[in-house]
Length: 264
Image (cartoon, rainbow, N blue to C red):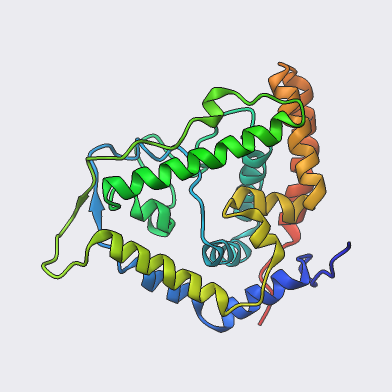
């Protein structure tokens, strides 16, 4: 079924959700939630920042709103990197696009999952890590149904619990970390419910790279492209995989070139 699009080339439902996001000032509301968490330090300096973190729906919308406001060159580069991430991450263990050797390229704008890492009690983090592992097993079964066996490195869970994270300036009245983090997640869920429902954001399941690929390439085309690239890479057909990637990345760059924040 075809969906109506806005003048910016977005699905009408997403354009409406972004308009409501801006109108309600939810970018600032999200920042206020982030600032509830204490500043932390870690001697490992980004060692654990290996995977693109899952985002809440309101974080996905915040990132899209920010992307629209970026200069064209930066918008195209970020969209292209995320689309390539999505198309290749079933065949290769891909790092977070913003992970640098000893830091995060977008540290001041990092997401809740990044800010919360090391703050969860060890037992709570272990439960969440196990849930992510079970989800990966479901993904592996879906790929097996397509005749594709994913590499073990791709299916490996996220990083182990980190003992190196410390609160930079412990406060006397700081709530229990798990209570504070659950409260932040609940508030983000509440904010999302104030917005019009958005099918693409829901279908992305917190995966920013999937959302960008859906928007730029289309719901079915992005999945078909991912299957083609994955099969080519796992078969050792690097040149063919690169050709397929280049074809779809060109479409993604063209989409990002014209997708700008609507004038007020």
